[in-house]
Image (cartoon, rainbow, N blue to C red):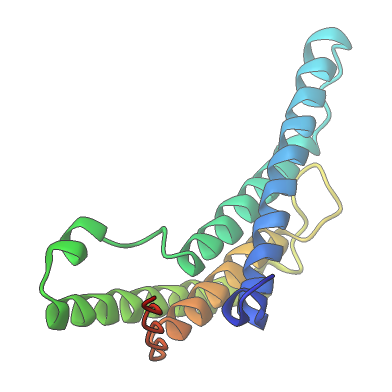
Length: 164
């Protein structure tokens, strides 16, 4: 049975982000395999494989990094935090979460700006807009901020173990 923290909205969003990132990696491998076959066996290299590969790589990295922030597996110094006394530990965790939230917000805002600026330009070899390259960065940055800010919420105290 899932706990309340595993069944909430943010954990579901993190799992979806991780699923999309993993799918992007699988599709990226398939696109690159087709590129090799087309270039070396068919002697007809398609122009769409490189921009699509970059879009898929951006998606995998941005959403994967956001999911890692949710799992507290990214952007941290766990050894330093673990070795610190409890009051300093909480301060370091808070600082880390605020830093990640700021970085995520910067990526999201910058990504949206670049997305809007490049929307009218077509990617070489495709009909897709160049600005689409920045959609994963925008979403990943926004998710990083949301996940990091959620980590600032007070954690419920663990229930004491029952003594028999």
